[in-house]
Image 1 (cartoon, each protein chain N blue to C red):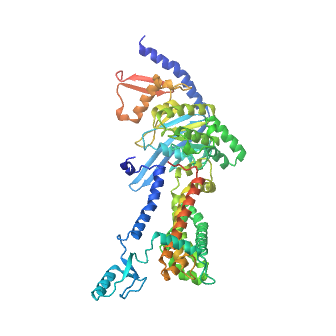
Image 2 (tube, each protein chain N blue to C red; image 1 turned 90 degrees about the vertical axis):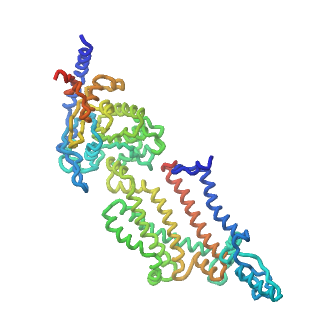
Length: 317
Length: 302
């Protein structure tokens, strides 16, 4: 296929091309990262001292390239030994293989102290908190959203206030949540709930409102009463769109996870990340961040796959 | 004997049977009575009259087509009868009982099929039956019977998006009929179909109508379709959105596609065209139809 055929406005591309584009989408940043990490002259603004010679540097120090050259020039003028080292990136940009190794090591490292947790336990804590927060929010938010979307009177009664609260950042409720709910998981779940719920009601209501009105009218002419319109028409009909909304909302919930986990007693994957940052183990910090990304991405892919199997009646090209 | 003379005799021969049929229809009980129906909308620029004072009666088992230019209120009329909109004033009686909300005694078929995409076509047909508390087993059997009638039994477990436009509309008709409504309302049901499918569907609809005890009000903007299907055509005018004329169709039944070229058919079409586009009215010949008799008069005779 000629290259210009890939740039036709509004024309979908083949399944195969779709797959390879997705692969490229991941390979592109990974290649850039690898290039920056492994090709020395691309960036590498620092020098890792291997042999300090007569300079003031110490071995395993990372010093700026300019300082390194200046110091070496100075000691050379005095006839003393120069330092030697290799060009490296700053410590906050570890190479891909280092991050991969850090991820493996982190999972294998037993807790340092009694009472601390393995990494997988921390990850599981995070998943638990986010699942509970999201589930509680959905239990109230979905029915309320559907009702608001179906009955304008409920929408007008409810949505202006929800819209108002929506603008209050969920983390701002942190201290309050801790005061009321203690320092363990409860306030964290509350933050996820607050962060998700108010958006959820509005998004679900909006999706419900966009439901094809002629289908409702058709059902009415077939004798459906108000209750049946909700349970037999609007809910099953809007379900695929609601499901898509939920996938997007779950992504938002993850963004609240990090702030939720550092209020009260730190826990979960955030505890791991902040601890490793304190020890300047940036490879492990990267590992932690990537773990979150992987969990989110995989969850969404699995949900997408499930969706395609549930909603077989949906029209697809 | 001129050719013209022979033609007019043929009219009379055929119109005798047609006239008898139309008179028979009028002896049947009145199913739907619309009396001084008005519908106004409030707009930013003021009041818009969607329907201005419309009255008519529909008899049992009658096939009515409603035509008129766009914006004449055809759809509003049928939507009010269906109970999907409220009139500003006037009354509609179905079997002498006033209409105030949608119900399964008035089935409706829309132009864009409106099948429930999440249900198989069998379950689409079962929908109305389930709503009227029919036992599931029985609803299932009835739905299969209806699918048989519209010739789609083998597709019962397919979803609507897997069907062609014509098939979808057959399901929609079966679904609307499955609850045995008193009257079937159809809002440009074949408007989205290609010409060939459309012709098939018209013949199809006539078969169903003839085999069932059902009254139909059918909206269309296609004059030939209206003549082919209807006993009477209600012509709505665009100026004041009133009922301009009720045209009785002088074409005999059962209708066949070759009647499209008959002189009754063509003269009726001419008459309807003149009604809808008054400014284009030709002065050469005037045609009027009364009691199913085509009357031609030359303008030269004055």
